[in-house]
Amino acid sequence: MSYIMFIFMSGLIGGLVGVVSNPSPYFAAVGLVVASGAGCGLLVGHGAPFLSLVLFLIYLGGMLVVFAYSAALAAEPYPETLGSRPVMLSVVVYLGVVVVGGGLFLGVLVNNSWVTVDELVEFSVMRGDMAGVAGIYLEGGWMLVVGVWVLLLTLFVVLEVVRGLGRGALRAV
Image (cartoon, rainbow, N blue to C red; front, side, top):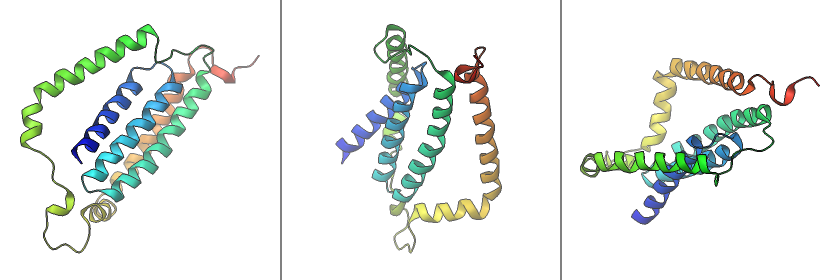
């Protein structure tokens, strides 16, 4: 099981580095899918399958729509690929930051390891992740509304940033 979790963690780090190191939204969307799938695999391994499913559906549904809009408006004729020199340089820098940060926090992560949600209570009627979802809607409904507004604002900001001076693919000819 620890090998599978190591593969999921490596996929998460690789996907996140793929998202942040790409100037082109086409290849960053692939990194987003890899990071989301690996993160959901980590959640399943630590005892939160319902939260993993909800995160996978909502995160991929929402963020891939933003990437689709930005890719449609960017319309680069020759986007930077994963093998180009500037992208590989940023990948090396980001992976170096991950290795240094992992080395600094290695003792903290080993001593405070995760326990699954179901191991916290001996006789529980509900799974921990489903009770957490009910708690989100019960006491944090206002935060859900704030989160929706923030995501809507983020969509407009991304579209405005990607639009640039040339108006992308929607300019008048």
